[in-house]
Length: 397
Ligand code: ADP
Image (tube, rainbow, N blue to C red; front, side):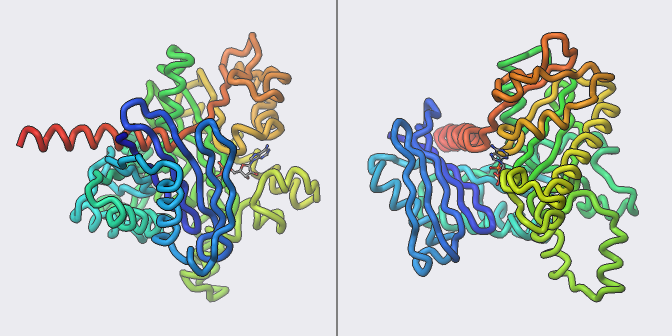
């Protein structure tokens, strides 16, 4: 039976999912984490228990080996699956890619040029593409970009106040998590079409975190910018930062670019502030002063960005929470929404604690939702569409 495989290759993990091509029914979803150190495979197969296996570190030392382990699992459990298309999450599409594309050699070369814009993600995304090309030479390989959802930003939201030639060169405010925002926007359209057509803020709060202002279904602003560092503090990333800090670190403390990159991407955010962990659950449990302050800063920045987004949207009809923290951490949602009564936003305390889909009170003018995001399904649906187009154009040729 024809299937669509999705791959989302991070710095030390590959998330994957397999869908039936026509119905997009999910057959399996899982990930290999800690590639190269303590590789571990976990997968949930539809209608079956979760599978967990520790893998041999020497054997799973890189992304190609991890993909081979994923394929071995599929061969074992879904030997009849005929993979027609592979959808890849590609973090950066630069200024030119505003929608999913079929990957050919030119495209791959263009995406390689964007590596400096997303040094911790793009190389792994592309090595996932190469590994999948080798494993499925006849499948249509489709790139689905995290930046694409934001490409229609109004110019004022797309630029920095730098000399214009730098904008022309591509130094712009791109925004990320686009596949999640696209999925959530579609889901909201089903759930509450009137609200989806209005002024919406989506808070994607996971290890990576960002917020998106959406008007009439279109992104008009994102907290992330040129790279996935800007905006909210994240698990290990700093979020908004005065560029003067980077200059100071270079000039006065003599840090190299690589050291600063490591500091801003891997040692900052919740982990840096708490000195403990990048994991929200661990911080909530720890309750140390530092952990509490890290959470305070996280909540403060979300509230501040929400206020800014309400200003550019001239009001708010719906607020959506998604991502691991947004979907599960009721205390964070409660604190974010506190004191927004002036905006007509009020939570229903018990619905929020229970993690219902609608968590605003009956009298709240702003509806507040929890939507479980599904980037994999979005990728699979784009890959299916592109594979169909490829078949149609081959038939017409
Ligand atoms: P990623 O961006 O890597 O996909 P996720 O979206 O899975 O990450 O989010 C991971 C974050 O969600 C972690 O900080 C984790 O602690 C947090 N999280 C997951 N479940 C809960 C929970 N029940 N309460 C608080 N935080 C949670």
